[in-house]
Length: 443
Image (cartoon, rainbow, N blue to C red; front, side, top):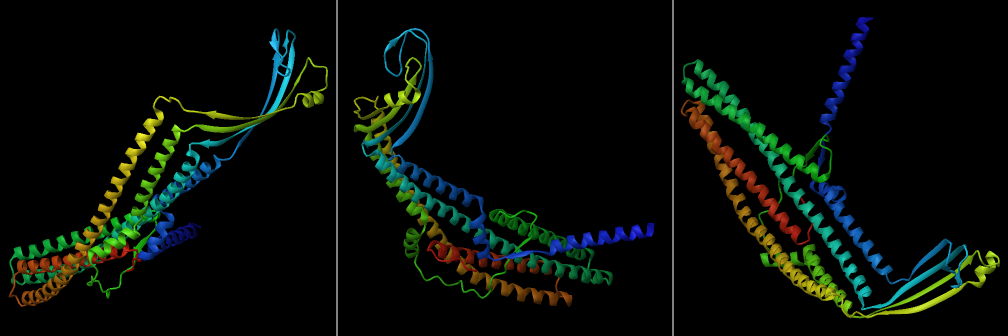
């Protein structure tokens, strides 16, 4: 019986372990386009911007509804003792009475200095502006995903470089150990080989950690749980990126037309100009239409409840004109504030234009620099690879010290890292320039 239970426990443990291994191996590989599409649908910053648009739409509908008449119903029951006025007949009485009154009333603004009309116009502009702000939020997420995705790819390739260097240095440790035992080298050269292997192992760990940090950043942008396994798709190595034909001015003009920051800042000016019209409306009179229907019942009247309701039924309609004479300078202050806000909105528009120009010009200059650096870095990497191969052959023949071999390997490592960095910077800035012009990002 004990043997049977033991076998069951071992079988259960094996199945659990197998499930954990399968879960770890179940890694979803995300392309850049897939990551962008998923983030736009699920990122909480984008969702918050979309909710702000919904709020603006509700405010716009509310402003339109303010033109409609309102309608309220009322009902009251009153007990009076002693000298009082009959609430139904308005006669002076000294008896105890019970009374009920029923009615509906309505009012409608006919004219309010065009404030209602301008409020609707302003809220319509704010709806459009919220749409642009939502697009800005989406664009920010797209750029963040692009940056972190390329950083993850860079870190992924850095892992391969570090692991290759570690494997090479570990072989060198074994070779140095054999030469040390044979008396061909001194102990210091063997320890230098060990030190280099340890350094390369550290570099592998650091590269893997950097990769996981960027994967974590991508998960947060995509709103994925941290427990979900994720990997990035390797890009096409045959991409033609060393090719920049457009001028920065052309890119800037297209960016101004495409980027939503421009539309949002223009609508901000228009909304503040409309706010000035609303404020000026406070100087003009307000004309309102009012009306009501009512009836009531009193206990001191001998007629029946229904008869009293018929007899006491009344209708009222009227016009109310309110002319502002002195409002303690409230309207004057509102007009001055609106004018100041218009100037601030115009300054903000200039700031937006400068920021767009800065982004475009920075990306353009960095793209030019990166495409030159990638050519130089590739040539440097090729030369370093050839030099390291020669150094390995010399070391095998005993014509090169371990220190010089390590120096050659470090030179190759730096050349490889410089090439990877320039390659991904080249991709990043070219893709940013494409994005600023309204073109799709593709890797």
